[in-house]
Length: 290
Image 1: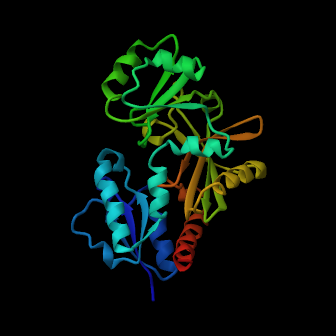
Image 2: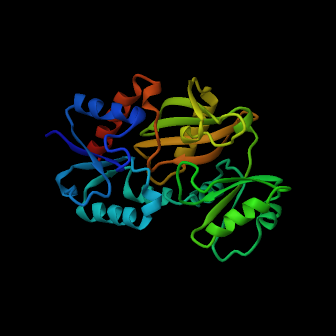
Image 3: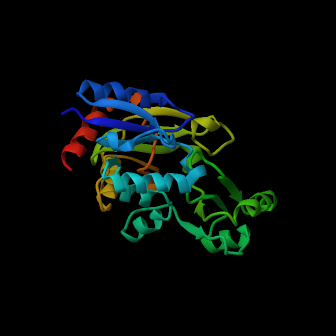
């Protein structure tokens, strides 16, 4: 029987977007029935699907309680979700970085800031031991509420952060100059197997590599040693995810993790002609293994 698969997206991208549009035909070529579904559309009957694959619900962080309710609902219906719901919940909060660090993963130094933490940004940076840092919510996407901080230029940032800090937890990370000098490396894996890699660069004068902020992307042949380091990070997880994007910088031959994207990462399927077929195959393999 052909699998009925829902691809989860947002109202801003009702037909998916960018390279993600290559996934439906790749799944259909393998015999799957595919429907693209806006995640908060109340008319969707989720029990009609054999599986829900999270792809472009890129507004979830602005409606987080509703998104969490959807995950709970899918779990109650016993609909297969990729990645699995436990992994999604875990990955929703960037505190996972501290857990991976405890397991021996090379992670950018950071501090968690809770709403009841009254320290100034200056004091927090002193505690982290850095002159330059980046602060962002533990639950966000697309560089939302993300600021680059410099120890001698904090007045404006303090005012901006004061408007946000009571609403949610934040993550303060040491700024990595490699982001500006070289770029952010991304390695895409399907079921733990390396698929393709890329380098994201910020536009001149910025540090944000996302395309929404003028960043650029280039397919890259990732060195084998770096692929192996990224694969080892995935081995630290409780469940091997169907899809994963490992983001980091390279310093002295070591991959230092910035983000492990297991929820709704853009996978840049357009950069490798075999990426979409590989992803489609991985999805069906994951479902058959259940």
